[in-house]
Image (cartoon, rainbow, N blue to C red; front, side):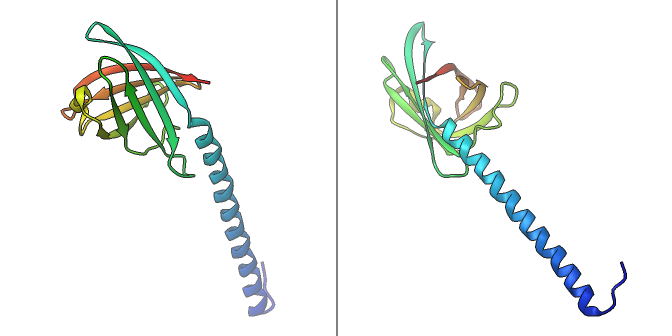
Length: 153
């Protein structure tokens, strides 16, 4: 492209730069809306029953959104005879499919049998939109429990 003056050259590149900046902003906005829509879908309650020490134990999990970035904070509550809970560090579960789990550290427990998970982690695998598998590991990295939960409406 031939320019007749420096002013034409400057105007052309300023227009190109402005259009690229606008396009980048639009892409960021569109991507952000998609993450927020997913985050709204993930925040829910889940339940299941696990056999622990040859006894059935009811498991409840609540996923709550931490912010608009799609991060959630899982909390797992164990029924009788365990009667304790685990709270995980905030993280994202949108890439946690059945092959690639999302690893979230255990932030705190409320004592009892859950204390063996202090400084441990959970690997979350989303099987489909209504089922999730969770493997709980102790601090040493040894798997302690495998949970299968389903979404509660």
